[in-house]
Image 1: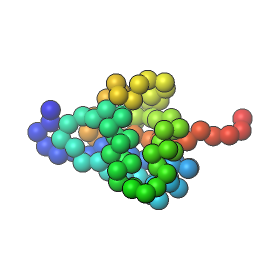
Image 2 (image 1 turned 60 degrees about the vertical axis):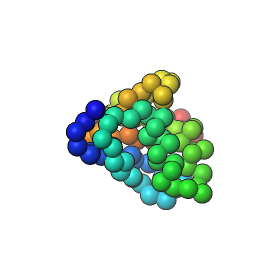
Image 3 (image 1 turned 180 degrees about the vertical axis):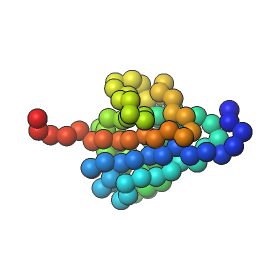
Image 4 (image 1 turned 60 degrees about the horizontal axis):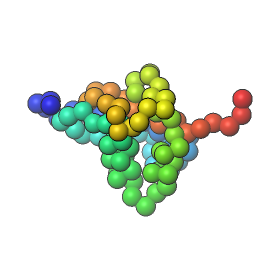
Length: 92
């Protein structure tokens, strides 16, 4: 556990940005969070929106590393890191 309050930055792209009504949020925390907790806290910041549904379809990056198909409950996000949510893109 950390001694001081720190930030996990959350960035939204495309449809996630539209659903959130912003391109970023900051989550204040004193400890690391799972990706599932980051997603839940992000949704809680935007009640009455489709953000939860959209984030459920998004891929995620932590820093520049793709999370892939890993269980969001087992992926650790540390304070100071940035999580980016990217909706699926059509085309090729």
